[in-house]
Length: 179
Image (cartoon, rainbow, N blue to C red; front, side):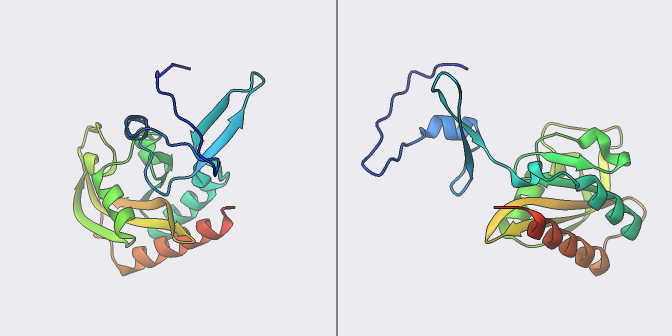
């Protein structure tokens, strides 16, 4: 644990402000959920909470989507790719890129006919560099954006069928997540 030198008072409602510099560095946005821990030394620890990361059966959903659509599949939370189909393992645990963030923010399924690695992951370039057609479907629960389902294919352009299957998968994952 590193010291920041920042001291804050708790207000009469028990609130404390997390300084902007720390929120920016930790990519904590308005509406993010934080998990609170207390260790044996009475140290309070705040950690970004990702219900999608806590979900244990993402691989089963990925395998089913891959079989149904014939596409490569990834599932992310709001920060990182969490799980991938076997052909996309190189993208696992990487920070999400601009197009994924854009789709989640718009709360709408987005299809791109020709996507690059940086659309999905920041600071990453695969051997191919091109993903072909990609589809990004946000996972939303009770108005909160929790992550996304991402499909990719070099063999075909993604259509309404893949969009509908991804939206159903996102809704099923959303309903399975406890909040």
